[in-house]
Structures are given as structure tokens and as C-alpha cells.
Length: 458
Ligand code: HEM
Image (cartoon, rainbow, N blue to C red; front, side, top):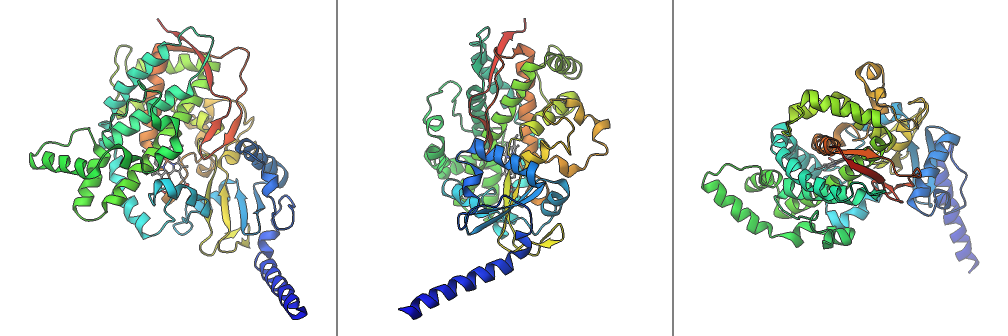
């Protein structure tokens, strides 16, 4: 019996010693002290709003690189400075996702976002990149326009109200957009707000495409169109491209499904959040709305509703507005990596397996990078003011090999919807002033909605 206890104590001491030695450099980073075994789990907070504010609080106390022990098994290095972010994001080695992404595997499968960063990811990334070429994106613009028309009708029901939460309307719009553009599927949730997908997003997102249609059937239709030499019109561009690579046996049907589910997940909540926060800030800044409208009249024309990639890209002032909103309200507040190879941060070797929490929200809202960081000021992104800025101090779409594949699509969609809304409505703040309760869900969320008021412009 004594021998058994002695053995257990020996094993504990051995592993404790091994861990202390392995993590000596890691443990020398500053960070909240934490409790034995559970480390900093309780310090992080009990909900995603607390997590966001605590990560920021620790950044203020401990600086731009600090450690957290999330339980005994998850040493986590939080990084919020441009120099270290550049080291990690621009590397082709540190592309491995952390174990946190396993949660998404159950409903997205092993698509681009969740894949750990292996050969399959490399192959799929290469195969899918052409789907986001601007020539393909150009074909989506009429979808943005048509579905944007429905959005205007829905918003119009609230013209002259004392205020309403705009987020659900925008979410339904972006969901319709991603369904139509990625798989030619008319979900029509804008006309059907009780759609089951919206009611139970997480459960329903599980194998979304499988519930919606038969891929085999879609493939047959595509084959017929191909044999008839029909030009693949704008109906199903992402899906068409995937069928083409499937035909060449480069990807399996199951993998097509995983990537479509991934686009669904990555491609609507992100854009809905961004558009909603843009509307919220614009409602508070009449002068900014006015300048956008002037620019739209000049570049696109007062009576012209035809978007092109070129005229949307030439809306330079609008661009600065969207960038500033995505700085303050960083749509994806943090991402994670797992150290898979030799990595030095601030001269210290970080053990393999350590989680790197790249806190983009902290980077974007730090006074060191942006003076008066809380102030909404689009001029920060004018060409004169960005010349000398470190590109890694602004990474809303991440950067490097695993950056957002859909960023051009996203920006076109955000701009097209803002132009449509501003041309038709004057945006106003609700009274009394609404203070958003921001939370670091996977996507930044306002727990108490995004209310605005609108009036018809004419
Ligand atoms: C404002 C909108 C968007 C923002 C802010 C955004 C941001 C991001 C960020 C930060 C990442 C890196 C995630 C990580 O490393 O964990 C990412 C990856 C990704 N995004 Fe987006 N995204 C947006 C819209 C979209 C859209 C519209 C699509 C598709 C239609 C899309 C598809 C993807 C995919 C597939 C990845 C994984 C890329 C890879 O690992 O190779 N995103 N996005």
C-alpha cells in the first residue's frame, strides 16, 4: 500500500517537474496567477461578454503578450501586438488550428475553416481560390441587388418606428445571399422569418446541404447543362466549380458538402454582423451618411442602381467607413492556432502544443495602435493616414496563408447593401442612446441587439 502511494507521488512529482521544465519559458510570460489545476478558467468569465472584457482587461494589465492556463492541459498565449502577429500569420508553418475548432467539426465536417491545416486543406484552398476571382464575383452582383430589394421592403415596414433591432433583418438577407450565390438555393428566409434554419441555427447547420437538397440530383442537372453546352450562368457558381473539380476526381462528394456547409457558416453571420454595426455607427453620424451618399452619386450615379465590382471598389470613402467599423467591432474577435513547430515569441521558445490566442479585437482597440481608439473616425483609413501603419495592426480578415478566402465577396456584399440602404433611408440613433453589450462569440455579437431608427429619404 505504502509502495503504491509512493509510486503515485513519484508520478505526480515527475510530471510536475517535466511540465515546469517544459513550460519554464512559457510561465515566465506575465499573466493572471490562476488557481492550482484549473488555472485561469474562472478568471475568463462565465459568458462570452465577460470573456471579451476580461481578455481586454488582462491586455491592459499584462501587456500585448500574456499567458493563461485554461485548465491544466491548455497553456494559452494571448497575442495582441502587430509584430508577433506578423511572425505567426505570415508563417507557412504555424497554420495549425487549435483543438477549440473541434467543436465546429461536428456540424461543418472537415472543411477549410476547421481543417487542422494538413495536405487536404492545402489542396482544397488551391481548388477553391478561383471561385472568389473577381470575374465570378461580378456575376453575384445582381443577386445582391435583387435580394437587397427585398431587404429594403422589409426595412420599410419600420420607417418612422421609434426603433427596431436591425440585426435579424440583415441576417436573413445575408443568409439568402449566401444560399443563392454558393448553391443556387432560394431559401427565401427574408419572406419566411420562421424558417427552421433560423430558429435552430446550430442544430440545423449540421449538414445543412444534406437537409436542403440532393447533391447527386444537383450534379445530374449540372451534367445535363454541360452536355447541352449551356453556359453555366450565375446560378450556382461555387457549386459549379466544385462539380468541375469533382468530375476531375480531385475532391469527393462528401468533401463538396463540407465546403458548402463551411461557406454557409462563414459567409452569412460575419457579413450580417459587419453590416449591422455599420448601420449602427452610421445612424450616429449624419455627416458620414451624407458623405457616402455624395460619393455614391458621383461614382455610381444618382439614378443608377447597377453595381459593378469596379464601381463598388471605387467607393473609397465608404471603404474607410467599413474599415473603421471592422476595427472597432472586429467581426471575428479572436482566432486560435496550435504551435506545431519551433516558435519564438519575444525571444522565448514556446512549447509545441501551446494554444496561441490571436486577439484581433484587442489589437484593433488598443490605444497604442489607435489613438482615442473608442472614437469612430473613418479618416484613420484614408490613404495618407495608412501609409506608415504596420499592415499587421489591422487584420479583420486575418492574414497570410489561412486568411479569409471570402473577403472580397464579403466586402462587395457589405458595400452593396449599405449603398442600397443609405440611398433609400436616413438612419438615426434610438433614444435614449443604446449601449451595445458586446460579446466574443465566434463572431462578435451584441447581446442586446443593434437598434436603429430609419426614415424614408424622399
Ligand atoms: C465580414 C465578413 C468576414 C469576416 C470578417 C471574415 C473573417 C475571417 C477570418 C478572421 C478568418 C480566419 C479564421 C481562422 O483562422 O480561424 C476567416 C477564414 C475563412 N473565411 Fe471569412 N470572413 C468573412 C466573410 C466570409 C465569407 C463571405 C466567406 C465565404 C463565402 C468566408 C469564408 C471563409 C473561409 C472558407 C475561411 C477559412 C480559410 C482557410 O482556413 O483557408 N468568409 N474569415
